[in-house]
Figure 1 (cartoon, rainbow, N blue to C red):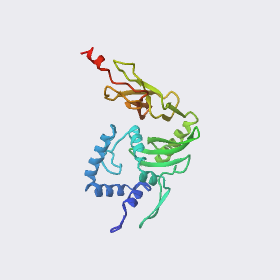
Figure 2: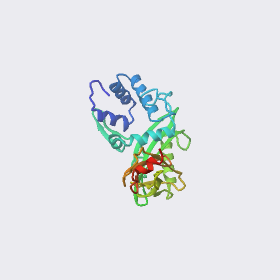
Figure 3: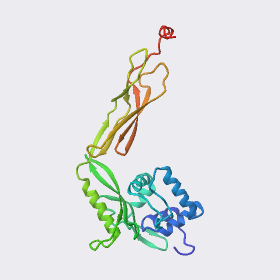
Length: 275
């Protein structure tokens, strides 16, 4: 940047994410929190809050050798970041025109190849070549997004650029996906996932109000846990009686379970005989 140059917040984000401007990252950090140190503290607090246990930030741009993370942490972070429309739009841009700097090109040379729509590169001698990537694939005639992370690719005689090596590794990972992915319905609407227990009458079934469909590899583990809700003596047909948590690999869905039929309140005589 030059003295008195002005950037909008959007332009600053574009300058940081597309040509990978660490100086812009430091500037945005100071703008947001008053200083880069204060912003780094916010970053570390945010990392802890979303479960990034292997991540520690020492600077805003990631060039400080004390900044460290793991592929699994960066995967979780990428999934969350792609839920932000502005972020998703910026990282998919092959180039941008900025004040003074003019046209700046995306450092991610993989963008647009093999269905890759982002996300972010990184490369230092300590960290090696790094790339968080997202790509569109068609599974069972449905478009799905594949997200992955490559870290620590070192330069070799055949591949002297760490960043090019990370891009090649990402493309190899995408190539390994092949035709094995499946889109399956794990829970169908109306499926019985539990029963309402009542001492005075036979309990109705607790059925899924909605279905759960996922894209996953065969043999991906599936677990279903049911958490009951506090209920009065009587239950209406269709009344929510529990919640099911359906976990397929790392994908978690929540399904409301409804009573398949009504449960009448206990009669006065039933209550009296048990006093």
